[in-house]
Length: 195
Image (tube, rainbow, N blue to C red; front, side, top):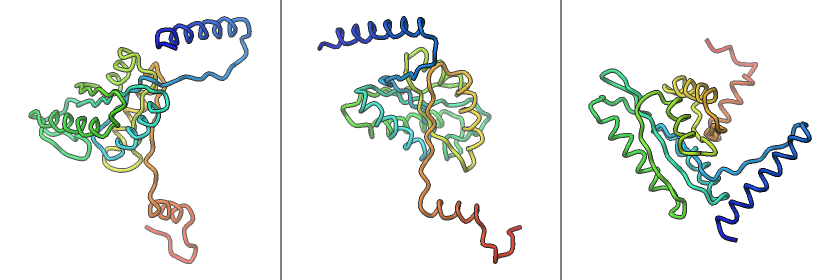
């Protein structure tokens, strides 16, 4: 079946489903196919996990990726991922290099584009998702570290303003991190409490 015919058949089935839902207002399980995925990356190691998940998704759907990073206007020095960088254009160069490195890691059978924007990250990611007709936004979650609070704020705002689903990827814990987390949850009763 040609791609145009398949798209036409999909549109007809969507129209039939919409008509059936109008007749029967009970809640239904909705599914979607993420063929056009926007991955918001921030220059951190966790971004690799987000890109890896997005690659798995588009391999299943034969889709495409857009890697997006946002350079946030800042005073004379700024934090770009893990690196404090002077804002003399070097933040943009670091971001461009990071995007190139990520794009080069994508399997060659997956179409990928990169985009660098300047401004408020949450609103620009949401706007780009709308303008690019993306089906899904994927980004890395940061639970610890110096930028965790800032990234969490972007994620919360993105969830409020995005018109498409947002998938937040948490980095898997290493065995050592799991053991430390378990020890923190169940302290040894024979040891004095930590100050």
